[in-house]
Length: 53
Image (tube, rainbow, N blue to C red; front, side, top):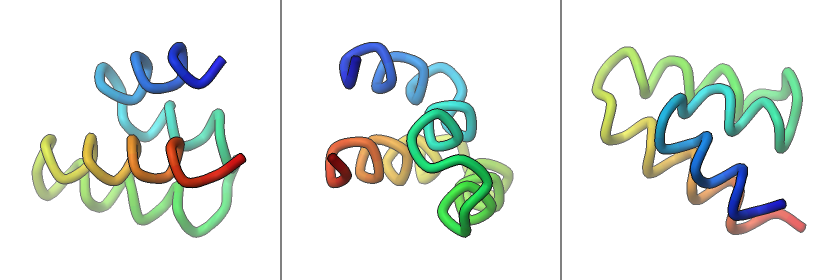
């Protein structure tokens, strides 16, 4: 399942974070990072997915 989330995170970073944590603070931070730059949003999303169980 994590592989699927990482693929989604590369395509749509906020969706990948949402699938992992829901509407938590990490989701809103990822939206901000994605708006400021697509690459920071991807890095944050992959980090959130990889660091959580």
